[in-house]
Length: 395
Image (cartoon, one colour):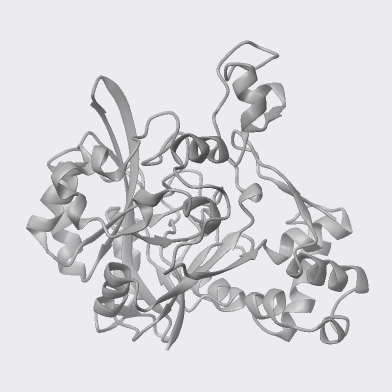
């Protein structure tokens, strides 16, 4: 079966998240988006885990279901902050677990290292190799996926606190890393430039902090396998049933190019190099974006495609398109109403990828319909994001 999975999410007890973020809301908007499997997020948090246990009433093949039979996989994100080679490291990792029993053991171990009650994504001073080895001592079925690997501040390969390879970070535990989450500011064609990434499954998830359709499933991974924990994990290990990914345009991501948000300065990598990576306005260091960082580590030209490359679809959220055409904020009443009107066609992925123009104009303004078709045809440019600022579609 085809599974569109968003396994990197957060609940309402994580910092900077919606306080209305609950499993019923996630289920509702996952269906509107077209996502068919969600991660639970934040399973170490004491209040969130109670919410999960109350909401997920049935388990089958290590997948948990709500009373209306929507599937969730037990997941969380852990922030590791430590020093290695005289450099501060900040690496976020996504953790997948097969059962509440295993989750309890993970949580109890983490509590010996610090607190889990203050944030859904807690921070620990644990090096990556120790982290993986300790989790595997709890259960060999636990899967660790380095999260948003290119993010400057908290990514495995990020420009400010990361490493230059997976091996540098995980040492002898590298053999247990099978997948990498590539993040919003890169896409497969960028990641294919690094031969060191060839052996990994490259996955995409939303890292959502709210349940709205422009957040949930904005990136997702497509599996062609049985809906079971073991089948998903096997797909990550072998790539055989990993069918592809749904990506935002990488320029839409918050860290695509270099820049300095406070000074309203955005620069392409070659422009930054000419300035020695220093902001021309305040003379402080620029935040080096993903495009620049990939250029530093790449050993292949742009456009290289591995023999086993997976299919991917490049989208931006439908709400962004409606907002841009209407010239109004993404959460304004008029944009939400227009989104709800066009959603009568079906879920968002169907609208963006497959619905013909003649069908679209039955449900929405012709300008919005044409904008969807133009984006589908690759005719829309994105003003690139930088230093925490999202990119903007230019219709």
